Image 1 (cartoon, rainbow, N blue to C red):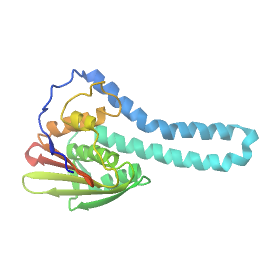
Image 2: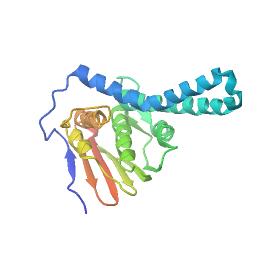
Image 3: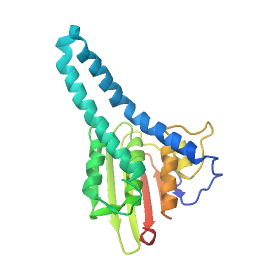
Image 4: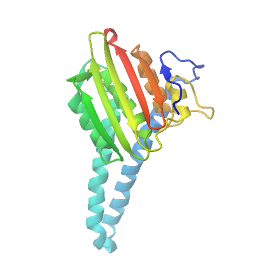
Length: 229
């Protein structure tokens, strides 16, 4: 059974009382949440290397150091673009750079990512929107599946479309709410602040975002007018 399409433009709910410092703190919490696993694994591996009584495990520990360092680096690069877009100066990020960052962040996960695009690059605001939508689209298929990313451009709009297909595909109600500018009943945390931030980007770009949930898929369709870029 399909659920109604949700459209993100201006907030349809009462905006939360979220101060700039509160938003910054929550975004930092989200970054820390994503980095804690590889950084923690690095610490564990170094403890093993420091223990001369576990020399037989040193090679495994070195493998863990290499893997964790790679994961931490990939996540840092991705989050830097998704939340900062390499600074505030105008510019274009090539789709090859975006693809490399998506692969570095999610390439070892359960979702197979398919690109369908004919653009050479995206303006930084659209690139930031895309990377944040990818985070939500991967989250929508926790058991894996196929994420198709489609990018198109005409004289008036840029269209960013993501479709997540997989078993138990879903979109959490709090994600729908925060995308539209609302706040969860129990307050924001590092998980729910990211879709709220995504909705902020959509509105900042004077665009629209529609989400659709079906038994077989979850989709995100963003349209951004070129005149604001």
